Structures are given as structure tokens and as C-alpha cells.
Length: 91
Image 1 (tube, rainbow, N blue to C red):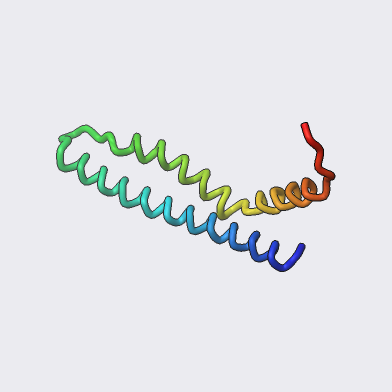
Image 2 (cartoon, rainbow, N blue to C red):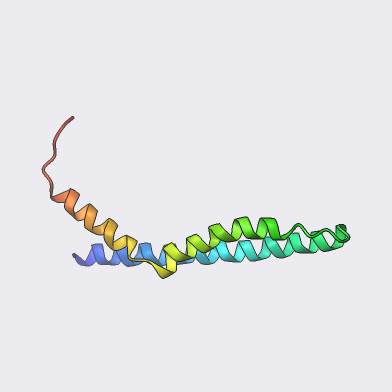
């Protein structure tokens, strides 16, 4: 892999992590805000767990793909390199 390609791959991985951390911070802030609204306005009815659960699944999947399994970029890089090596054809 060429130096500029390695740099771009590393940059993409870092941007994916920063995107996840931003997503997580917004999730925490919004869920806390909804929890305050829930407990101030609703007596005895707790509904904040539903948006927390639904959005939490999305945040968890984002974290898995951005932080835990960043190897997906290696697969993408390999596919790009393979495609660039093919001769061009017109369809």
C-alpha cells in the first residue's frame, strides 16, 4: 500500500471513530434531556426507556463497526485495489 493510501485509510478509521463518539455524546445528552422531561411531566409513567432502547441499538451498532471491527476498511481497501487493477470496460 502506498504512503498516501495508508494515510487515507488511517484518516478514514479516525473519522469513523470521531463520528461514533459524536453520535454517543448526542445520544447521552438527548436521552438525559428526555429523562428529565419524563420524570418532571409524567407521574408514574416511565416512557424514556423506549427511545433509549431504540436509539441505543443504533449507537451500539455504530460502535461495533467504528471501534470494535474497524477491519471493514481493510476489506474495502482490498476491493478498491482489486477494482483499480481491472481493465476498464464499457457497458
